[in-house]
Amino acid sequence: MAFKGFAKADFNVFQVEGLEARMEQLKKRVRPKLETLGQSFAESLSAATGETMYPHVARHARRTVNPPKDTWVAIAGNRRGYKKHPHFQIGLWQSHVFLWFAVINEAENKEEIANRLQRSRNEWLNHLPKDFVFSKDHTKPEVGRFNEKDVKAMLERLKTVKKGEFLCGRTIEQAEAIRLSGKEWTQRISDTFEPLIPLYRTAVNEIAVPVKQ
Image (cartoon, rainbow, N blue to C red):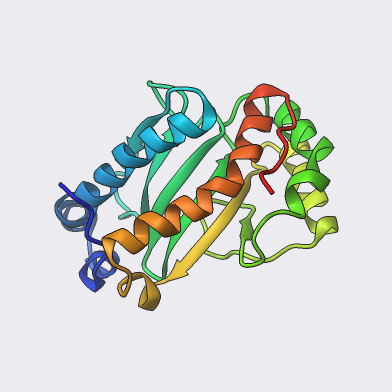
């Protein structure tokens, strides 16, 4: 199916009470859209990164009581899963859509990844769009804009703290998100992921890839 954009009803899913009822609505309304986006951007990211990328739509299988407050599709260079690897995410909270390059707490070799990103920090940080934001915790909706000192501290935490995470990209508030067409969303996601490719390649290859001018 072609992706035609997000609707207010997609965000209202997170107001549905109860795990089973909310999961039913997520599967019905949101998951098909994330699957479509995941397939599409797995292809484009494969071309951009030079490795085969695979989409993984969140199943929330570990939940037994509390309904999910967000949902996503992750795109990673591993067929079996994404949590142990640097990856990209497209997802929703009730308040906004998020588009991330992510290294989460379950990632393997976090120390090495943090060191690679730290060494090339000046190369990629100064070239990120001004509206990009960062997150230290993928389980919370809060994001912030950080200066070089903050990013350095966040990468140090990624390296030394078990729960340390590093997420970088864009968020789009609900009101704007529901106004964008499918074509506009494709462009917005592409424009977000393109400047994040150097971070991904650095994280997985130990090579600081020059940022496209």
